[in-house]
Structures are given as structure tokens and as C-alpha cells.
Length: 335
Image (tube, rainbow, N blue to C red; front, side, top):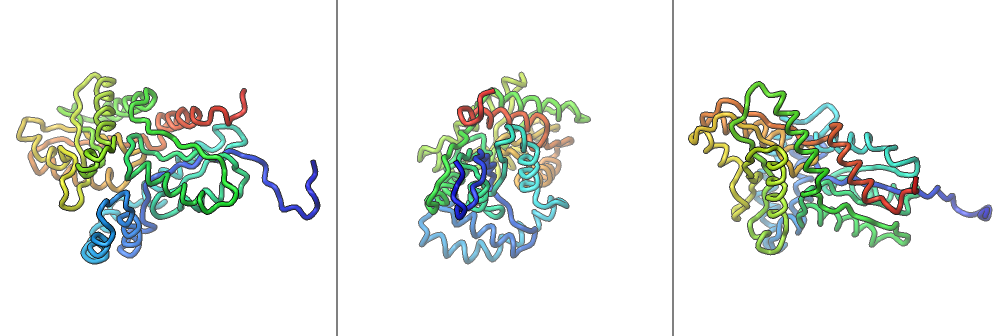
């Protein structure tokens, strides 16, 4: 049926896929990092301290001292095309474009910083997407990662008169496709090393220990990922947790502590992989690959290798295609 002459333009119906990752400052300088940290550390899903107590601390000691230090860390890993996390997530979206048929738009957003989740949902809707798959790229679920990404998306939906239909990508910590992709990536990276590691560490982003006691499944899902990866590789892996912040007790064992202790136990050649990250970022490239190496070598280690995330590698992209196509079933035309 032909619409009346004064009817607003109608975009052809499409399906949207929105890849979502944590976020990054817009530049590796203190002002940009301060803006990013203010948003990130103000999220009650990330820092579960009453706002009246936490905000004076955040606006005082934290945001006056941490931005300069963090900016220096970002400068160590910043790429010509920007932050590694943003650049890789953008590359993932670009590589997936067109992979699900001509009626599917693939885009990406960051929970903190740019491009913002709300802006990209609006762009997808304006482009004709009346069905959108939100795909937080966190293999292991946590309230501070998957949930807050979905929260931000739902907050945008709450402002929309005409909402698109929404699906969300579930955590895939034990998905056979994910474990197989990890194992393939690790085997390939280790085969290229000039040494044979005495130990393989799996380092996951840390969380306060209280999150486990409050019912967050993150710790258990990390443990299962590490166990399944070890079984797929046919070798023992050592699970650790990184990126401690503040005075609260965090999940253990701590990555930096373990790296400092291994040489004294006769383990002088180490490889480390970060299965909780879908794309390399500050926490992997600076905290593990640079500072982790320094910690291990200074403690008496002889050989250290950081093994990259799945990123936009062929095996990583195949995994994303598998996960996304599965969630789009029933929306995609039957072929």
C-alpha cells in the first residue's frame, strides 16, 4: 500500500546487531581519562558503595590522582587508530558486516565513553531496525559487565516511544564453540613461541570477593572456562585474577602475586592468556604484557609470553558469527 504524500519516509525493515564492550577514554591524556573514569566508577554496578559515601572519595582522591597514572598506561598501548579496545571492537563489527544477509546491520558501542550505547540503538532504529540483538562481548556474566551494558540499553529503550524488539546475547563461558576457539588460539600462539612454557596462566579480570557471596556467578563461570580450556588443551592451567582496586578483598589468587611467586617454585617460563576479554585492551596489553612481564622477570623468570585475545582473528570472528547467528534464529529469513 502506498503511504499518503505527507507521510514521513519509512526505512526498509532491518535487523540490528550491536556489539558492546566496556569502554575507553577518547584520548590517552589525563582530561579524557578523568571523564572516562568518572563515568565508569560512578556506575553503582561497578562500585557497590553507597553513593553518598563513594562520590566524595571518587571526586577527591581518585579523580585527582588516578587519571595521570592511567593516562601514562594508555599511552603505552595506544594505536594509530585509537584505543586498542575500541579499534578491535570496531574491526570486529566491520568484519561481521554483511555476514548475516543484506537485511542485517552490525554496529558497535561502548558502555562507557564513545560510541555510546543509546546513540547507536537510536541510529539502528532510525536505520529501520525494528529488531535488535544486544551482544555484550563478555564470555563470563557479571553484574558489573553484562548486566550494566544491558541496563544502559534498557534505559535508552525506556525513553523511546517506538521501541524495537530486543534480544540479548547470553554469557558463553562454557559454550563448546568458545572453548574450541580459545584452545585453537592458544595452540597457535604457543606454537609460535621460541620456548616451551612451564606453566600456562589464565588471567581473568578481578571482582570484589563480596560479589561472589552476593550471588554473582562470575567466579564460578571463570573457573569453568579455565577447567574446560585446560581439558581441551590437555594440560594444566593456573587460574588467576587481575586488576585489583581499592582496599576490599578481591577474588584470588592475584595474577601479579602468582607471577612473582612462580620463579621461586622452579617455574621460569610462563605463558599467560586472558579468556575473559574478547578484545585486547589496557588490562591485557599494559597490565599483563608489560607489567606482568616485568614482575615475572624481576622475580627470576627467564621467559614470558602474553597470548593475545581472540580479537578480530579468523577464529575469533568465526566464534562471533556462530554465537550471533544462533541468537538471530527466527528473525533471519529461512534459507
